[in-house]
Image (cartoon, rainbow, N blue to C red):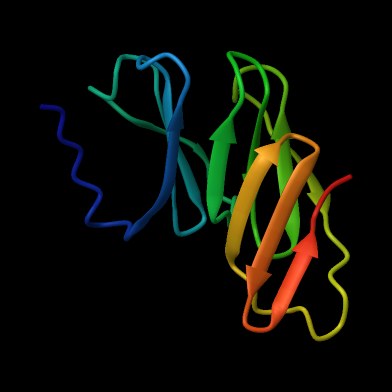
Length: 117
């Protein structure tokens, strides 16, 4: 069993791996990374206010938030932020379903929004 105590930083919102060796997880505005099967963890970024992280393969991945999508194409070592334009009245959604990199939906109270083409 692998155990990582993050009680000082809060609730884990989402985690991802594609190979069982490289892991990422989101908590608060912090993105953590492990390159040794979750034995040790490093802070990778302090400004990622994401809700869901999804890796598609060894290179491509996304982090979703209420007002942005972060994308990586280098295995999660760097993330590019794209702000989302959310229609008025659609604020408040924080749940997502990721069909593919280009087919992402968000929903909340009385709202369903397609976030990418």
